[in-house]
Amino acid sequence: AYLAHESSLLGAEYKSKFRSFDSSMESSPEGKDDKAKLLGEICTFVDMVPPFRDLATKSMGSMIELQKGQLYELISPRLANFQQALASNESVSEWDDAETALRAALYHLRHLSQAWTPVLSRNVYHMSMGNLADLVFTLFLDPVWKAEDITEAASRFIHTLFLDMARGAAEMFLADSGGAAPTSHQELSLTENTMQHRFHVAKKFATLFEKSQAVGKFMAMRLSEIHRGLEEGVFRSVTARELSYLISAAFD
Image (spheres, rainbow, N blue to C red):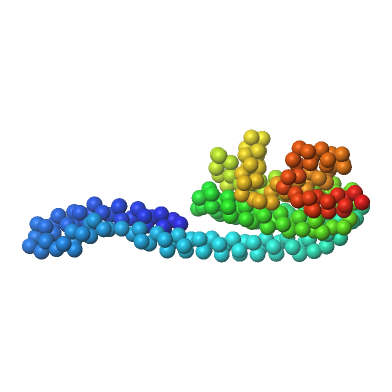
């Protein structure tokens, strides 16, 4: 993308030097060469812009697929038995594994944020980060959708886990002030307004962000609160079938 941008400007940068070259040619007997005069007028590298842009798109696509593969390896093995563990009435090792998987995924995304923020445009960065965040949400949501029994203790755990996931993912998205997402070693206190803006951007670029938030909220609700949440649009990102599965698993 950088080379494509530079190619669109390179001809204009050197066009004036070709005019000087044309003038010197005109003062000599050989200076009537029309080809030399035309060089200053047609000097451009614009034809190189599409190939460079195409190369940038393919390279970024390959990078995204590579990072998705690494995220899958960080998360999936640790969630292998998470679905069955949601039937437990007390904390089990599978819950600890889920927390470890989330921390590893968020650490990986923070590392990518530090590397990508200086070189990618804001829009490309957010689309790329949203793509990766959606994979994380999918891997954590799938065991919950498939669980046949979710105990009260497991509901509280999922509530906390999903709220942490939503906040951690939102921190990967940039507020108006710019800058990369905070690292785990930085003592950075985000203001409420800044955090709200990050949540807004996350909802725009990560299609499963609102759904994961809704599932996290669901796990801390009673049936009467769920009914009220339906009226208030809390679960508008959740399908009727998904919601019925959650109610059956958590309350039957």
